Image 1 (tube, rainbow, N blue to C red):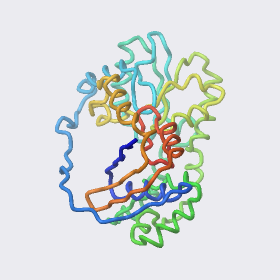
Image 2: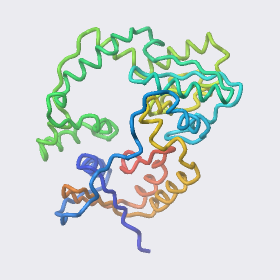
Image 3: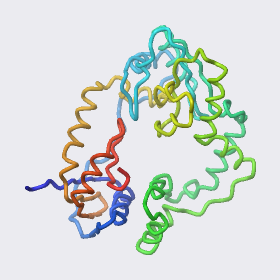
Image 4: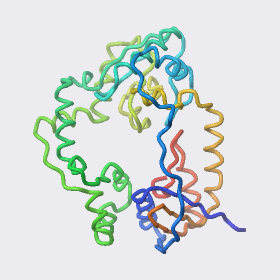
Length: 321
């Protein structure tokens, strides 16, 4: 039987990320070859995304959002029912105008909402969180105008031998390694304390304590990702975690996802995922000339297929899946 080759095109670092993952899969080997230059479409910013100046301008999108039961990485805000009391946990970057529009849209549906910033839950002043963000920015080489790929390297820790992977990257591509793992300035002791309090387990514990005192809360929307972990951090109130709270800015509200049909979304994902159990090779290319291939055993392909999906999120690196 002929098995299809799965091709993934991504940015240089993403391509390298998957390739390194493949290298450290047991029994797998990656091969790097030259690839002819390809013509890719130039990036475009959606023309319909334009800044607005009032809550009223956001209301059509907000109304659609609070009615849609589907969302990235979990259920949408539409799962909240009329008469429910909903807690929305925001971060310091949340835009008041966007949050107010969502609250108003919920009110129109007969859903009561309470908005609670995560820093307030853990007892940290907002100015201290802003100071932490400023320190992180100052200690980030990107702020000085250099390239910094570090936000995309957290997956290294999911590899069986992360330090070996880093060493391979440093030996083979030292310039890329310097951008992926740049040296950072040490945080102040206060900022270290603030950062520790804003971790998922810490916020989750504070959220659980809040729910102990407010039994009237029927559901919680919290976080930008990792819903499975966030739900666990809320123990013993896992069942009250209804979904993530992604649309905390006007750009998130207006990006078109709020009204995208969930059945079309899920069909597209299904068609992407169906072949994965039958592949025996992956190939990665990008506009900069990356062309990497690696073989997969039948057992690896089946494991890839079983772990590849988390609603709205496809783990296209086999080792990550």
